[in-house]
Length: 178
Image (cartoon, rainbow, N blue to C red; front, side, top):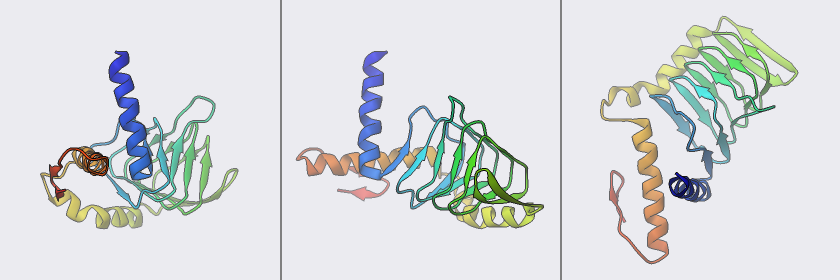
């Protein structure tokens, strides 16, 4: 359906311009995830597990036509990158400015450095789980909180705001009225 795709492309570009965070509409987001100050972040078509978190400037993308597979409870600190045929295990913390390309990172690992000189500190699973749990404790306790729904509402809010700036429309949603 060419028309539907063109509409999706337009909404995607508008969201990218307004929110400064690029999450392509074909990305299958996990059931729950968390973004904190996602400015200048790009999330490509990777397979992403529950508990995924990222902060500003993060990139998840392709290399040579391949996208990463990211396990559960993965936390990307600012300006970190995961590219290509990378497989990231469960309970992994990726340090600030880390660059991972076409690598396998095992479960329960903290990762630092730049490809190909990556530093892996293993057996940190309990500490990483505690960090993840602290971030999600309030979020998970609210049964009505759905990350995809909230992402859509944030986009809806921003689109409503843009429409108001352009001289039309009203917005009424979770974040109040404009």
